[in-house]
Image (cartoon, rainbow, N blue to C red):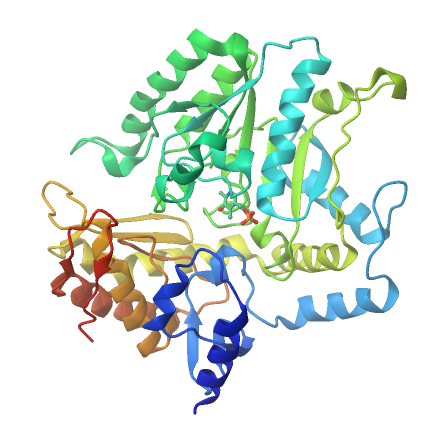
Length: 468
Ligand SMILES: *Cc1c(COP(=O)(O)O)cnc(C)c1O
């Protein structure tokens, strides 16, 4: 028995994996990873995989980065953890100072949570509670874009709109206003991203005009709707949204959990629109992909609405046990040091341009409707019919063919449905980008020529023929 096989069997006897139909593992091998370094993951049989999706979008400076490792080790020897209520510590103070300095002007306070979804809950609760403290008790609802994703906890799901993740739980969710997304994949032919994003803003304007008295906040993923298939839009939408939120007295919550820290070509996506949101949520790359942590930044105006004598009961009595964990803060500080010392944003421009060139030819592929890119995120949309952009039936799981092909070739590409995407660590080389483009092209050829039989049963179970 191979070492992989051994660990897979022990795993499948006791674990329940995230975002997984566990029955898939009757056919699909689980890959136990023994070690990782730079862009490479290595399994127990010694096979290596290029981590093209940054291990779910968290890793920016490579696995086992020596500078981040050293900083965490150093922290480990002085303080591993202390509660953050009534107590504090050096890494959390330094990190907060630096986040306030780096993020758009006007964000002055940092509240911590221990994962992205919890960070979303914090922002939603704070916004609602702000209006209550300000005597505006009617403002209880949230506006969200179609196809958005903000995490897996109940309120985070409520402001999300990816049916696969939320439909089952609908009876449990908050009632939100859903506004059509400015997603530029859906723009009419010949229309620019900017013009389309502007046109789509009319829907938002209308919802705010009609309902602003009961709306606490609008929440968006700036520039890229990640889990919704790496759908992208123009920064003008955010500029218009900021202006409208001010006009109608509504908070703007920017979920930069996926797009923050250089992914879109600027340190934060909001910079491209020249705006400051009322709440900015950061996680994922915040710790360089090492440890779970989220930061919610907000304005002094919001902070002051909670600042009062205890008996007024205006305080934000929200806590997560591991809030501000010193090891996570140390990883984040080391990550910010690398951004500061290595001119990362500028270096990424060359990498991003190369990702574009290396995948240019796929635009002509008969089953690729679009190759789109924003900074260090590039997505290739496979379709059944190119002219009409008719998607493949989801039951056919075409993306899985690409996933399996890439694994054989030594790359971790995990498509979202029929969307193949690259979201690599910033330490990737030009040659490694070429390799990914080659693997993706082969995978897309296989996936789009695959004979796929969908059993038309109500339970939508698919029979899947791996062509490889
Ligand atoms: C990943 C993600 C979240 C949720 O973060 P978790 O740490 O997985 O809870 C929220 N919003 C966006 C945009 C994300 O990509």
